[in-house]
Amino acid sequence: MRIVIVEDEARIARRIERMARAFFGKDLEHLVACESITQGLHALETAAPDLLLLDLNLNGNDGFGLLESVSAGAFHTIIISAHAEKAITAFAHGVLDFVPKPFAEERLTQAFARVAATVKKQDSGLKFLAVKKHGNIVLIDIKDLRYIKSAGIYSELHLKNGHKELHDKSLEKLEQLLPASFERIHKSYIVPIEQAAKILVQEGGKYQLQLQNGELVPIGRSRYKELKGRLL
Image 1 (cartoon, one colour):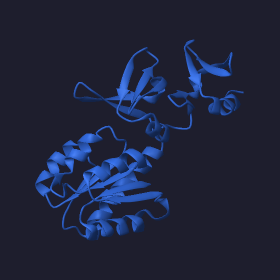
Image 2 (tube, one colour; image 1 turned 135 degrees about the vertical axis):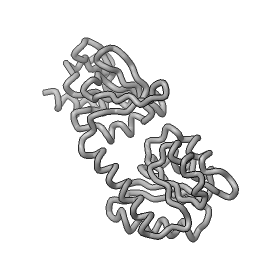
Image 3 (cartoon, helix red, strand yellow; image 1 turned 90 degrees about the vertical axis):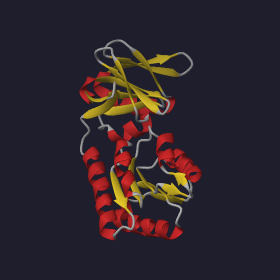
Image 4 (tube, one colour; image 1 turned 180 degrees about the vertical axis):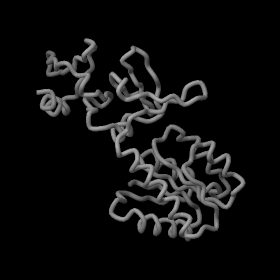
């Protein structure tokens, strides 16, 4: 678990940090506390967190501005704020929970438990990817994927029917969520291993993977040996 706290009151930030460390224990890999939107944005861009704990009033600046700047971020968010009237707006931003200030430890622990349950559910075996399309959520069965290609902070889902869908999570985050049957063969590609037909060795030490439909995708040099071992 990687956590970013954005809270401008040092006393509250220390309390949140203490509770987070106590709750997540040995599962906590990284935690950083920030006191401004600028610091928070930098932390989110560099730490690739699983959880953001965010105040909405940061030295007079609106915390929603931070969420809007990283709307495609692949992390869960818990708002901790005295502005309870902004809860509806917060949930519209896709946050997992809203904890009003002043908060009891039991309430924040409850929010942490929701995060843990959500992450555990994701780890138990992902079957669908949710894609936002025309204001609606469309579920894509992972069995329908031919491969996934990086598109900056997004990912392109290339389907067996020839269609493409844009997913709002990065390739790095999808790699964490997808089952072991999906292989990261290149910095920009993830492929379901059952779609792999054979490896082609090109001049100059370059490698390509031929898919079952004949399409070719690149293989990174550092991924070649591992992929070759899986296909033999």
